[in-house]
Image 1: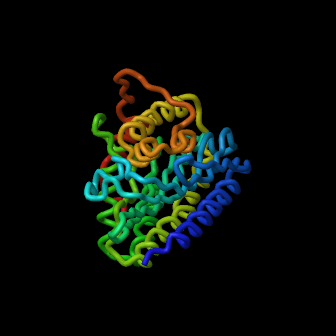
Image 2: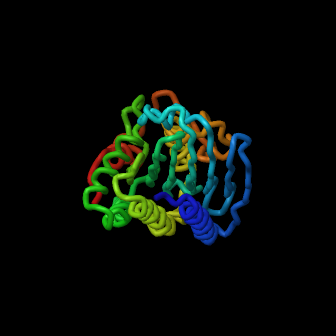
Image 3: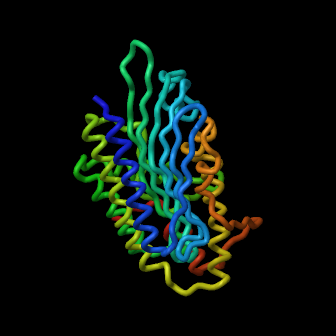
Amino acid sequence: MTDSASVKKYLLALQANIVAAMEALDGQAFLTDSWERPEGGGGISRVIEEGTVFERGGVNFSHVMGNNLPPSAAASRPELAGRKWEAMGVSLVLHPRNPYAPTVHMNVRFFTTYAEGKPSVWWFGGGMDLTPYYGFEEDAQHFHQSCKDALKPYGEDLHPRFKKWCDEYFYLKHRKEARGVGGIFFDDFNELDFASSFGMMQSVGNAFIPAYTAILEKRKDIAYGERERDFQAYRRGRYVEFNLVFDRGTLFGLQSGGRTESILMSMPPIVKWRYDWKPEAGSAEAKLATDFLVHKEWV
């Protein structure tokens, strides 16, 4: 038996808790933008721009529904195409100003489909991943350990599976490189009963604040110059490429008639592209690719 009301209550509380934690770090309040979707549902976007720590970021809650499952959602479950559906989740992307502080993404969501005369089909999805511009091994280890600890109560096999899934998902095929140092990613998850699956999603969501704030507090005040900012803008271009070309959440939002401002709040504010640019061998910029943007076991 599913309990959508409890999931929604948790997600709204999670959004509020994360925003409060990020506001405490930044010192600037997030703006609140509530919206309604003509096709059904709505959401609350919490956004910060030109903050002390965050150059741009958003922590979004959405609860939307429709009568025909969009292609991006039905891709892995073609037998569900055409069903009525309901989706809710919290999705965030935070872009710090300091190039030594990593960008972070986290998402937890619940999806249900309905068809007359047939049982509902539900699943959970989500995860979190870290995208540094300058790599620190201890940061990657801490982030991955946080992910592993969140999943451990629900099965020893989950972390290796979800870590591998994350490595494979957040990969720019046309560049043949990872977007960042990974984390965990899962979708279509209903292997456990509803209560246990919901508990696992909550554990992932609750792990985000300690996983990220410990890193941000260490990196947000490191001195930097134009060189670091320039490299940050260059690497942010990869983030844009992934989100617009490959990301299932972005595609689902656009295909389902979602709110464009909220869908594209993940875009970084300042980005650069260069033709066939390569960092100097042995530099900190080069080490990002050789030492961090590789699939490895951090914990």
